[in-house]
Image 1: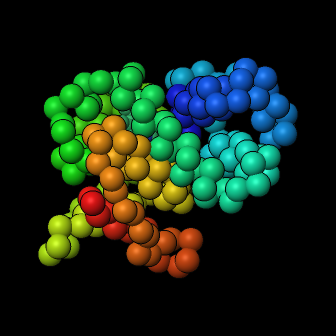
Image 2: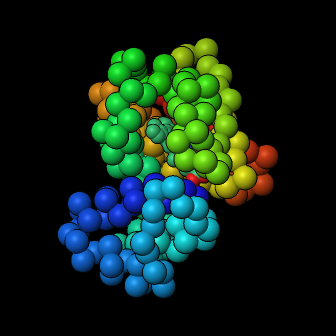
Amino acid sequence: MKGVIFNLVEDIVTEANGPDAWDDLLEAAGLEGAYTALGSYGDDQLFALVDAAASASKLPPDDVMRHIGRKSLRLMAQRFPEFFTLHTSVRTFLLTLNGVIHPEVRKLYPGAQTPHFDFSEEPGGAILMDYHSARTMCPMAEGLTLGAGDHFGETLAITQTQCKKHGADYCTLRIAVE
Ligand code: HEM
């Protein structure tokens, strides 16, 4: 996982709980810290941070990861406005993940391993987003998508209809724009 993701987590933790909170979290997770945006670090380090934050907040790790995703999107929108300005809705924004956003991310952060999404639509208009990744970070995908809803001023109801953690080949998020 690229250091830029760890930098986002640091910003979110510091913004919510003050400058000492990040050091406390690193200590609780048994990590050194000092992540550089372009560096690559083991996914286990991100999971250790999520677990430590989950213990501290008494929330399930998936909720913590969803929260990180949701808050990250706002910071990404500040740092990469060009990915957002062409859009006014979550739907069109999501459809550029595979062709524009993540390919650009892989150029900016060599070695980044971004997920791939397949999209389809239910007759009623809900978006079905299949999440393909070697990782099982579906709560992050859900949180980022909720953050996109916040960004575009849309209320989303997201349910996960299948999950790799429960034996499916990939995870599917059903996204209804309310
Ligand atoms: C709703 C929109 C988005 C979704 C659902 C999404 C989803 C994800 C997920 C789930 C991951 C974790 C890696 C994996 O599961 O394989 C990831 C990685 C990443 N994404 Fe996105 N993403 C979104 C938007 C963005 C945007 C706007 C940016 C940057 C401007 C971005 C940059 C990255 C980076 C840097 C990584 C780390 C890859 C690595 O370290 O190997 N993503 N994305």
